[in-house]
Length: 400
Image 1 (cartoon, rainbow, N blue to C red):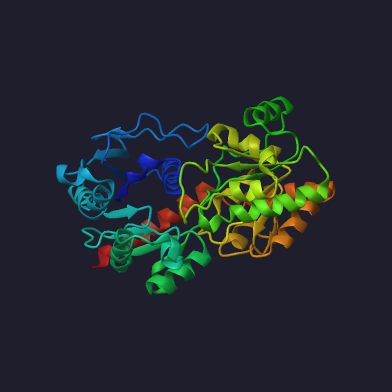
Image 2 (cartoon, rainbow, N blue to C red; image 1 turned 45 degrees about the vertical axis):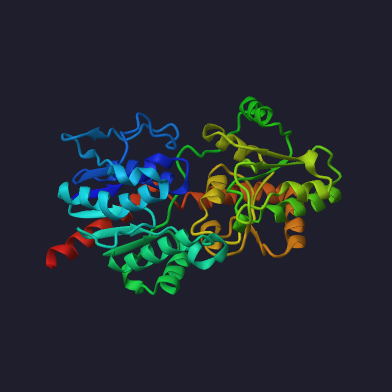
């Protein structure tokens, strides 16, 4: 087979879709020695592909001569005036046309952007349908029109890949797609996520981010569904109960970066509760994440809606005790290895955090459970199941 893959997210490598693309390609290179891959992108090939940790990136080549080729397909000039227009033209016209010129046998779009007029058999990965389920994520007329387009285009795809059983059911409900056209293939945390136990490394990273030895960690975005203000309120109650002056909450991210109803600022909540001095907001560098996860007294993830939930899985792969919302796909990911709570119940979250921080045996047991649960997920398995999906589509297309 010659497989075309939309590589637009080489532009946004630190996003969830960017991480999915790079980890999937690396794993496919390891498990598939037979097929050719043509990666289609509008930009020059990146010299480095961050997000793969210590692993060597796949040796993509421009032009002919390698199983993983990168085919640059530039945008037409008229489309470059606005980012949203550029993205739409790329997804619906430029990339599918490039795939056809490359004579691929199937075309994989690894995010929710199926072409309305597919020129070849197509596989689409839909990580979630959050904008279709939560109105706050589709406020602008342009977003509503785009969602209508891709929702209709999804019916033209040969096969849909999604990342959890919950996401599959959401897709069936929101897009009215038949279950038999959807395959659930779980994601995984990268191999760079390993327990960090060296005291000097942990101390150096703590100093870099201004935290002491006892901190609760959150990473996963600051948008509405993530419930970060809830976490701040729960932490304030916990702090009053624990009588530990050095206890801190480290929140990954910069609240100044985005604002509005979709990004509620947690800092006024902290100020009202007298917690501003105990809460730190910092962007965490990729290379520091394993140590920050490993050193946390607990990783708390209060999100009310996830297509998969990669952040708690990364924390588990580092052996962190995880306290996690019991909503949507998260129970599938964390299994019995995390303490789960109702994200509408602040008191329950306070009680569970206090339990983990007060009971060293419980925390140690959660660390062991985390490592065991995380080991069930691997990018190798993701790649093997994705390759099986490609073969299914290829065989089906040869019959017609």
